[in-house]
Structure formats: structure tokens, C-alpha cells
Image 1 (cartoon, rainbow, N blue to C red):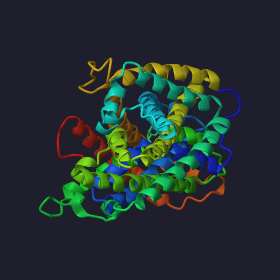
Image 2: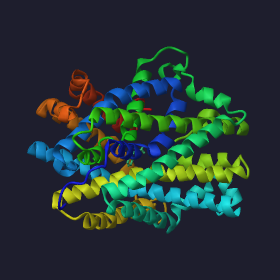
Image 3: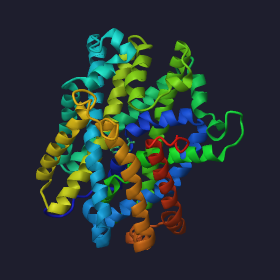
Image 4: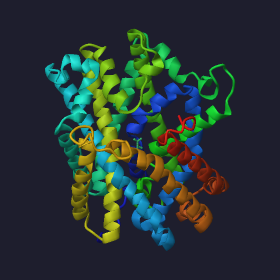
Length: 478
Ligand code: PHE
């Protein structure tokens, strides 16, 4: 990249951008599910403890590496120690693998947004009454010959339009529009949900701690179950804070030396967790109500991922009659913004790496990346339809990329980063960066302990549990 490195206009812009990346589909479609299935308030407490310890350590490390080197992941590690450059390469492949399939999911969201907008403004249900209630819409959408590809392309181009405008004019400004709307929509929907008569039981179900997640069916405490819950929460926290995806290194490299890393990280954590918590309030009580009304067991009705977002929730919205169209519209707008801001951060990690490595102009790098992402996303877009017969290790493309990045590559990169900083450069490298320009870093000893011992240990356990789950070895993960 020619000229001086881009930078955020201030610490708030940085916090907003990092929070915008962190707040994504994980907050909306996985956190509520995990909390509902695994102990309600108990899960939330474990999750919070992990955010302020492990999450804090990893995020501080990545941001400090980015800001110290003024580089994106591809070149940052090698600049500190040449031998460790391979971690940077791995860390760059992760966003390159995730962005294409994340954009395909963004495309699905676009379709649902269009459907609810039509329903709200014209009264026409393009999904078809019967299909909307049975969940067939989703199956038809993802296996259609062209639609998933077309909507995915649209989503990629929209993100590219933001990236090409640069850090201040593109990412920062788009966040200033999308994030407040996202927050207001989430808050509005949650307030609406908790005031619906009959949702109180669902709220209790979500918030009251129960010991299900740590006890056997006959009520005895089980250490193995506690370990599984902690690992489940670790995986969620890790993904939700956008760690080990190269994003925090990239965004950290645009941060000013005068801003306190410690304070910014605390704020990002608060934003991300708050939205996850609000998402739970917005989703669990209505799904609970729906389960009661339809006579479905709550644990069965409360699913995660695309099944929750594109199948269960549309059925729940249909329960509200005419108001359902507006609720669906508000909900999918919120989902779209959450997905778009996360996709933009991933995309930026790729573009920035390319700029730093090949000294390309932003425009050239963005165009090249858009082409590459479009090409790669076609596998995920068509993987449930036209190319449904092609499987990678028994998985469809999208599922394979999702599994391989989240469960294998990300823990490996995070472990390698901790070992590198904890044992090779020494935690001092990060601590000094956090104390640049006289800023305070109050938890030096805690940080050193975490990065050297506890973080690699927990992350290794996470990696083992995820791989065991994929191999069908039961009993290791939730
Ligand atoms: N933190 C994001 C989430 O919760 C994860 C993510 C970030 C995924 C960026 C893709 C891109 O959904």
C-alpha cells in the first residue's frame, strides 16, 4: 500500500469497528441456543468468566501484535520473528476461507429480508403461506439453481463497496449507520418480546441458573459435564469475539498509539456480550411460547444456526399474524447488519494482508479479492443444490469450510499465537505495546499467566474436543 498507513479517527471508532466485527451471526443464532440448552444463567455466568479472562487475553494479544507491527496478519508475525511467519499465513487463510461462505449466508439473509419487506409493505408473501409455515422455503432457497449464488454475489459486492472506500470513509462510516440501527432494533425487539403476555416463563427459562449443564439426569454433580459446558462456552466466546481470524490484528494495526488497548478491549467485550444477551431475550421467550403453543418439547424447538434463524423463527413470526411481517422485517434487517459488519471485517483482513504483502493499492486488492471470494463462494452457494452430490469428508462445502476454519484452524492459530508470545517473544512484547505512550495496563501478571499457561491449555482442550466431535467420538463436546 502506498503512503501512510490508514488509521481510525479515534478510539471510539476502533471500538465500534471491532464490536461490529464481533457482533455477528454467532451472537444471534448460537448464544441463545447454548444458553437455553445448557443451564440458562449458569451458562451465561461461565461465558462471562471466560470473556473477561481468556477472551481478554487473546484479544489484547492480537490487537497489540497488529498495532506494534503496523501490519496485517500475513506479514505481522514474520516481522516480529521470521520463523513464525507461517502463523501469519495460516491466520490469513482463515478469513479467506470464511468470507466466501459467510457471504453466502449473508445472501440468504438478503432473501428473507426481501420476503418480509414485501410482506410488510405490499401484503404479498413471496414465500407462499403454506411453505412459510413448514420451513420448506429455506430448503427450496438453498437448493435453488441460481438464487443462493445471486444473493451471495449481491452481498459480496455491497461489502466490497464499503471496503474500497477505505478505513475511515468506508468501514468507519458504514458502522456509524449500521451499528446504532442494529442496537436499537435488538433492544426494541427484546422489549417487545418481554412485554408479550405469556413470555415470562421463557424469560425465566433463559435467565434462572439451573444445574442441568453440570449434573447427570439423576441429579448428581458431574465434572465431565462441567468441562463440556466450559468448552462449549469457550468455543462460542472465541468465535463471537472474532478471535484468530486475523481481524483484530488488522484492526489493531489501524489503532493510534495513544489509545489504551486494555480499555478498548473491555468495551468491545461489553458490547459483544450485551448484544448476545439481548439476542437471547429477543429469541428464547418467543420460541418457548411457540413450543408451549404447539406442544413441542422446548429443548427440541430451541435449535441453533440456520435452522433457528431461517426455519423456526419464521414460524414463530407467523404466529403473530399481520404484525409478524414487521417483526420479521425488523429482525432480518438487524441480522443483515450484524452479518454485513462481520463480513466487512473479514474481507478487510484479506484485503489488508494483500496490500501489505504485495504493496498493492486498496482498489486493486479489493477488486482482486472480490473476484476470488465470488469464485470461492460459488462452491458454498451451490453446495446444497446443483453441486449437492460433491462432499468433502462427508460434508457439504459450506459445512466443511465452517468446520475446518472454526474447529481446526482457529484453535491452532490461537494456540500458536499464545506459544509464540508467551514463550518465544515473552509477554513483555504485548505488555509494552499496551503501555505505549504512558497508557496503563493493570493486569500484567494475570496476562502473563494466561498467555503462557491457561490460554494454550484451554485452547488445546477445545481443539481436541472439536476434532473428537467431528470424528464422531461422543462425550467430548456439547
Ligand atoms: N464474531 C462473529 C460472530 O459472532 C464471527 C465472525 C466474525 C464471523 C467475522 C465471520 C466474520 O458471528
